[in-house]
Length: 352
Ligand code: SF4
Ligand code: SF4
Picture 1 (tube, rainbow, N blue to C red):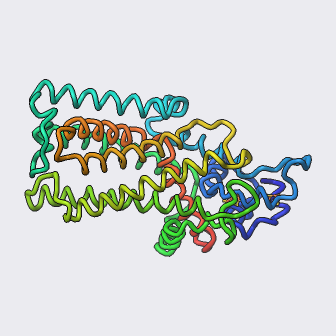
Picture 2: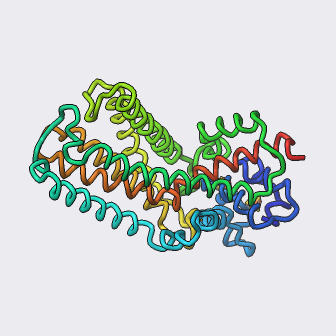
Picture 3: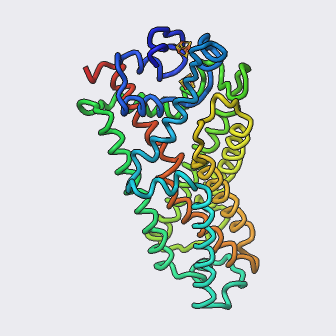
C-alpha cells in the first residue's frame, strides 16, 4: 500500500485507491475498510508495473482478499464461533442442513407419519407436516439470531473504523447507488479481469443475478408473511400469487448467479484468490444454490407424494443458510456497504 500510495497509477480504477490516498499510515481497521471496498476485479493486478516478476511483487487483490476473509472472523459475533466456520465453513453448513432435515423428517414421522408421503398443494398442506407455530418458532429463532449476529458484527466493523460523526444522507444515497450498480466491479470501466488481461462482465452479471435473486426471494417471503398474518391465507400459494411469482424469479436468479460466481471463482487467476482460502465464500454460494434448487423442487412437486421429503430438505437447507450467514461471504456485502458509506462520507469531506 505504501508503494501504491507513492505510485497512484491505479487511482481511477475503484474506490480503494482514493480511500488509501487519504491516509499516510494504515491502521488495522483502515486495512479492513480497504479490503472490503475491494471487489477483486483484478484490474490493479494486471495494470501494475510492480507485480511479479518485479522484485516488489505487488499483488493488491491477493492481499486484500486475504484481509477480507480475515475480517469476517475478526468482527464476527459471537467471536468464539468464527474459527469453527472459518476452518470448516462448507462442512458446517452441509452437516447443519442434513441434521435439520433429519430432525424435520423425524418430527413428521413421530407426530403424523401419514403425511410424509402425502401429496398436497391445497392451502395449509405444509402445516400438516409441521404446525405453523412450530415451524415459525424454529426458523424465526435462527433468523432472529442471524439478524442480531449480523447487526452486532456490522456495528463492530463500523466502530472499529473510527469514523467520526454520522454519515450524511447524501453519503448513504451515494453508497446505495454504487452498491446497486456494482460500480466498483467495472475495473475502471472495462469490466472484471478475473482470468486474464481480457476484461469481461461475466462476474458482474453473475453478481447481479445473485443480488437481485436474493432480494426477490426476500420479497417473496415477505409477501407470504403478509398473506398469512394479514389476510389469513396459508401456504402453499397458487402459481399466480405474488409470493410464487417473486419466488420463481428470485429462485432462477439464485441458480444462475451462484453457478456463474462459482464458475468464475474456479477459473479465476491465482493472483486474485486469497492465499488462506477459508472456503466460507464457497459455502455461502453453495447454500444459496441449494436453497433455490430445493425451493423450486418443492414448488414443482408439492402436489406429489414427494412433498413431505422435499419440504424437510428445503427447511434443513434454509436453516443452515441462516445459521452460517453471519460468518461468511454474506457479511462482506454488509461490510462493503458500510465501507461504501464511509468512502462517500470521506470523499464528500463530511469527516473532515
Ligand atoms: S497496484 Fe501497482 S500500479 Fe497500481 S498503484 Fe499500486 S503499485 Fe501502482
Ligand atoms: S482488485 Fe479491483 S476493486 Fe480491488 S483494489 Fe484492485 S482495482 Fe480495486
